[in-house]
Image (cartoon, rainbow, N blue to C red; front, side):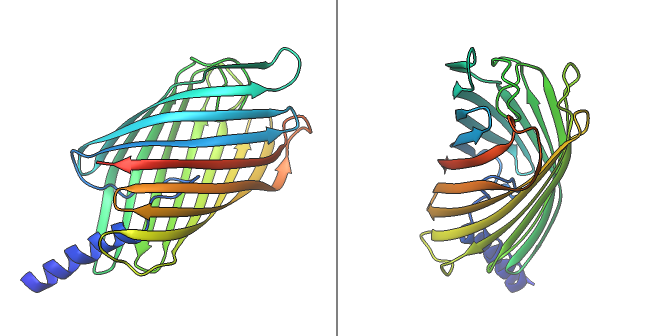
Length: 254
């Protein structure tokens, strides 16, 4: 019995080492109560309106092994046409997660998390989905993830409400992670990520399906991320349609 417990524990630790978290998606893996993570993921977004550069500074804390709270203070630089250019604070975001299901086996784990993001109207009213709307938004969703030593799968389904605006959104995400190196200690890994985002703005009846291709380097408690996101299906007005997004950033857990 003791041997089985030790092998299960080692398997769970190896999974944590084998893959870092997704880049543009989210996952339900929590690393332990009392830990902190600081991170940023810069997004350069080019649409029919112009270009915006979003620079978030995020800190997350795990009060317990199955709860997480986070704060994001974002800066945005934008050039979206006459009268819409500048650099300022974007919408501040408050994050909460609760892991309500965890099933670990040797070399694999399945977990589910309830998630909420509260976006405060601190930024300019740019009508930039997920970046800066200048209006209050409340997101509520569920994340499910399955990870083994050879691959990882994460999915998310949720709804974003904007009581005083018209950007209510059904959101679905699906991501696949592929570690390229064998698990090792100290941790060193290169991961490929294949991630999809589906968004339906119910009031505007706009829809888009995006694909993100990313690569990640993880070493001990630090990860470095790079990804490019492109539209696969898009039913947006021409001046709002996404041309591409480029993401790059890093995170550190302590």
